[in-house]
Amino acid sequence: ATPAAIMTGTGRAAELGILFRKGEALQSLRDVTLIAFDKTGTLTRGKPALTDLEAAAGIDADEALRLAASVEAQSEHPIAGAVVAAAKARGLALGAVQSFVATPGMGVTARVDGRRVAVGALRFMTSLGLDAGMFADTAARLADEGKTPLYVAIDERLAAILCVADPLEETSAAAIAALHAQGVATAMITGDDERTARAIAAKLGIDEVIAGVMPAGKVEALQRLRGTRKIAFVGDGVNDAPALAAADVGVAIGTGTDIAIEAADVVLMSGHVSKVPAALAISRATLRNIA
Ligand code: ADP
Ligand code: MG
Image 1 (cartoon, rainbow, N blue to C red):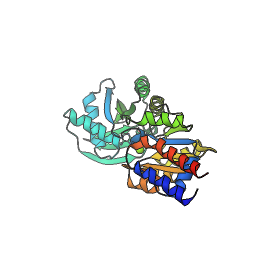
Image 2 (image 1 turned 120 degrees about the vertical axis):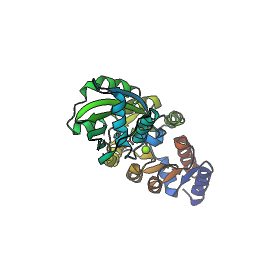
Image 3 (image 1 turned 60 degrees about the horizontal axis):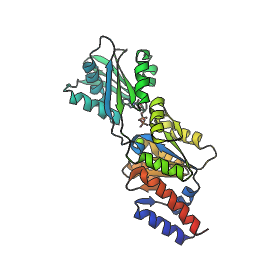
Image 4 (image 1 turned 45 degrees about the vertical axis):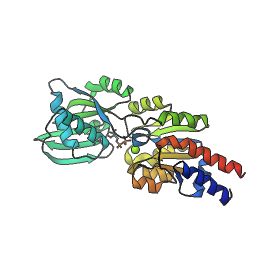
């Protein structure tokens, strides 16, 4: 492509709020056949809320929520905010917390009012040697609705299951449909529960899903998806930066973290993922004009 054509293309994109940080990105994007998306904060709003709470026999649901929220008050994860907000909405007074530990991609533990409390994913409970089998049916039903099941253990016993749901960005489904119409395949990479992720991907019409990915495992997941294809990755979070750098084209959400924006080749200044089809169309048109 001539420098003039590249400049015209990047200029047109900029008018739409699509910032190509390097001219080569316009060329690389044209050749992409697969676009993989981060889920939380990219396809979804990243603002989950508590939707369900069910306690084990003999456990008071409000007390389980109060203990869980006391621990989550120490965490910065979006899920933590949902649990704390739900406890506050019920007027529950949070307890004093000691020995807080957060395990990325898994969950959190601490002592609250002298009790040992753990909150997190099924794999976290399993890693702690706790059996959540009693909640298996409930978890499957809720996950099929696209909700994320979390478990609360108190003093080494499963006490409750709760769910959070993160609303989809309004434009996500239309963006995926537009990309398919442009002939590219789509995928989602997430740390979320497999069943939850599949339900959300189905709602959006996304072709491929890799779920249960640990924060450090996104690049490996991306390479596995990529195979021999040219891949773009769209993300917003600190955890997404390595995958944004590793992809053939990294696309950051402009309202995302600075680290993601710095690692990306393309930044969507507005409109979230709704601008991805336009970015692809501009890259193709620019390079067609000069071919
Ligand atoms: P993602 O941003 O893709 O959802 P994360 O790696 O941040 O992925 O989290 C993956 C999973 O780990 C969450 O879906 C949740 O089950 C569990 N988890 C992580 N942090 C917490 C937390 N503070 N409280 C409860 N669960 C957590
Ligand atoms: Mg994210």
